Image (cartoon, rainbow, N blue to C red; front, side, top):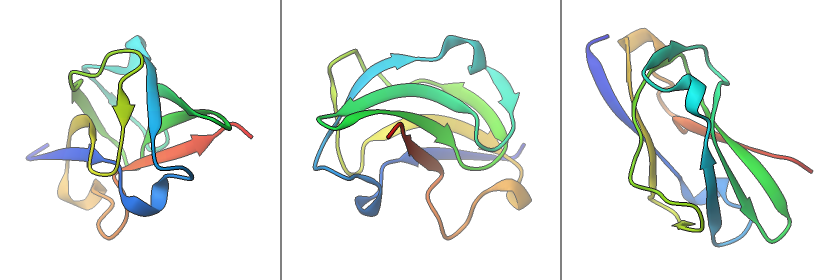
Length: 100
């Protein structure tokens, strides 16, 4: 996997101005995961959401987010490695799946 990527939150992904980080999902880090794998939980005033990797890759490093930290536009929420053909070019590297 020759490419290291940053999964960050883009403007059209938030339904409110801010999300609040809740927790990491520990069992998926430092491993290769398929597209759609959830790696963290967050919430806004309307409910919770899962942060998921948009393409397959190796979830390598967690940013220094602590429970209660704000996740805003541009916040990096994961570092991952992927082969070039697996990088979701032209769309976010992280998907937010809202629970409602």
